[in-house]
Image (cartoon, rainbow, N blue to C red; front, side, top):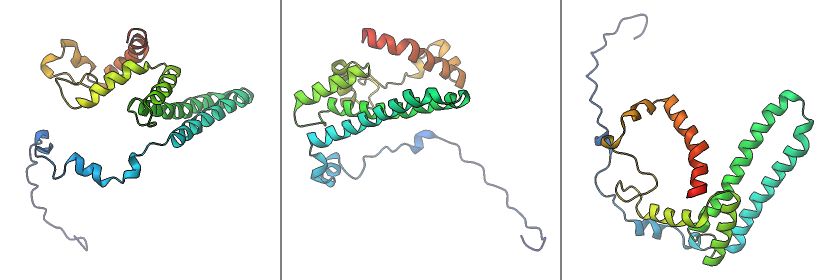
Length: 197
C-alpha cells in the first residue's frame, strides 16, 4: 500500500482448531537424566558446610537489618508514609525469610552438608522457627519427588479429575472463587496443617 493506493487483501484462512493435546510432547527426549547430570560440572555437586552457613548467616543479617530499620525508624515516619513503609517491609522480609526456608528445604534434601545429622538439626531449627513441621514435611516431600507428575501416587500437587469434582467446584473457577479458596486455605488450612499435620 503506497501513495494512497488500495491493496486487495486476500481472505484470511480459517483459524485452525486449538487442541491442547497436540502441543504436549509425547515422545521421549533425545537425552537421558544421567546425560544431563554428566553435563553438570562435578564441583556443583560438592557440599560445603562453610558456604551453606555463609548463605544462612547472610539471610539472618539481612533479616535483622530490615527488622532494626523497621522497628527503630518506621515509628518516626509521618503517618501516610508508615502505611507504605510497613507493607514494603513485610514484602522484603518475606523474601528474605523465604530464602531461609529454601535453605531449610535443602536440608531436607540432604544438600546443606555431607552430614545427615547436621542437615536434620539445621532443618528442624529453621523449619520450626518458620512454623513448618520438618520431619513430616521431609518424608512427604520425598514421596512427592519420587512420584512427581503421577495422578495416582503423588500426594502433594494432585489435580482432581473433572469426574471427581463436586457440583460446587464450577462456582470457584473464577477470580472471586479462587480468592475465597486461597483465603480459606491461608486462614484455616495452614493453621490446621500446623496443628494436626
